[in-house]
Length: 276
Length: 282
Image 1 (cartoon, each protein chain N blue to C red):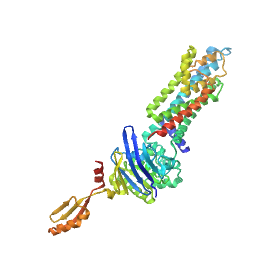
Image 2: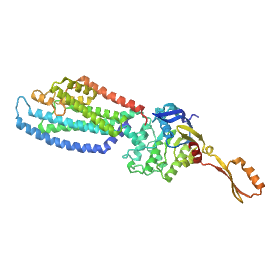
Image 3: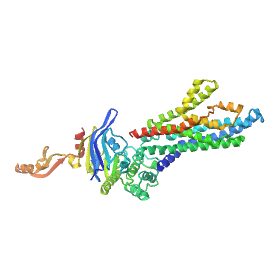
Image 4: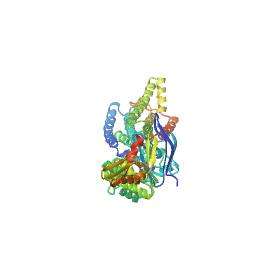
């Protein structure tokens, strides 16, 4: 099946700054891809090129088979910007209504109601944006991005203004999107969040992809700890496959073994390892 | 397209600045009615009726209406500038633009739709105020312009041109810089027109040439002067001479080529704005 987002050799230069230096990336239908990287790594530029806000200097980006930025590509995606605002005088219902018309969505009132329900704002239909908290506006922004059932959702820091309860709602929402087969490119600084929901993680630094894989692939085994009668014995270079041999050796040496733990690095440790 | 136009219209009408302009307009019209009433009464007193060389009502009517035209143009230009100064860069910096641009609308359509919304409000405002001033002059002195409809439309067209300039500026400049810049361009256009009248009075070919050039570069002044010209197009004698030296730029017939150029100019400015917007990273 063709990728919903296909990026190859993508470069972007802002005068003297090389924001992207040849990025290759693919997001498959229904896949939830987390985009990680330090500030200034080029993540937002990548997302902006995908949705046609920024023109690439070199390389290719396609959304649902159409060149990024074309009307066909924009028809297939939904986007939540890192910094966005809706006019304060509009109600939540009006914001979604406007985006339905722009996205040629036929979902009408039913879709607006469903989206507000999904993002946890079922009672905010008639609430003006100016009267909403930042978190409510962010949820409305996510609902706006989902108007028209896009094949690809580009979410740039969707939980930056949310409290823990709000983040949980977004996580559940992402799970729901996965069930529906919507592909998501999630740009986030919250590694724990990415680790929890994403199928695939891409780490970008200095405009290049420095690591990619599933969260479990990126996490590395970091030794074995064995709890014995004489205390916890650490074997920093041992791997899971070494466990039986280690246990045998310890038992042979007269140790009583109570527990064995294979130490794996967290995604955060793996991330820090590749970007530092 | 319609959705963006309606969005732009609602955005325009909901701004506090629009309410401020409406309040100022009511104040202006009230003062205008009072001043026009007094002007007609007083000039009849010192010129006297039945003067064969000078019709005091025509002279007073044309002068007060000319002043009203200047005030209307000024208010309309301020309104149009404030409605368009932040359409691109300002809205992009505020994060209002990106959610709209990524929709399958097209940047050109988005820009033109926003222009239609803002320029439409400004043009309707100018036509409304102009109609009110004509009605007031009729009420105060029983005087109506020689041409009633065309001057109002030309005044509205002048404001539409100013809107296009501000919109194009919004692609490149931050809102405050764009607002100041466009109002300075507007002022420069009016001053160039005034220079032309001074050049005509003192028979300076160079001043007239500069004014003519300015009319082509900034055709809103040519539209304004042509509108003034049409107010008294059938007036003759001493009144005609006095009116040509109007206090805020005299009347001057633009001619078909300059009026046609105004339309071409508007299209060119919008095309340049669309081209620049299409290439702009947001």
